[in-house]
Image 1 (tube, helix red, strand yellow):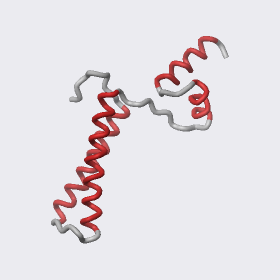
Image 2 (tube, one colour):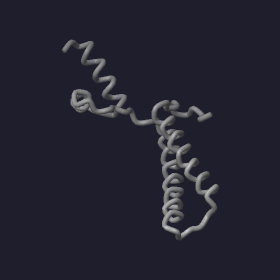
Image 3 (tube, one colour):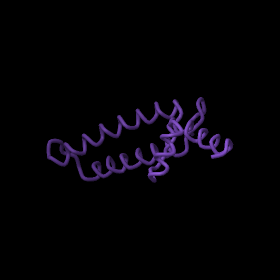
Image 4 (cartoon, helix red, strand yellow):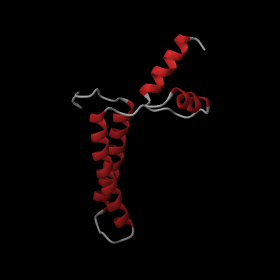
Length: 103
């Protein structure tokens, strides 16, 4: 491996918060390597996950009959959970730079 190749691997590994060895191991095994989002996105992701968990718990209660809502509201809750997942995916795959506002 040339110094240039090692530099490229080391830079990609650092971006993914991995050691070069772990980066090469995961790459060689065909695993998907995802860079952690910036701190600003981590906070938003934590909030979105918490909201999603609460909505999912509500959906479980609806489905077991402990909470009674009309079907329209249940469908809107399900759609909201889907939208939360889409927003979270965007925050992970298209991270904002630290300090950048989410539009």
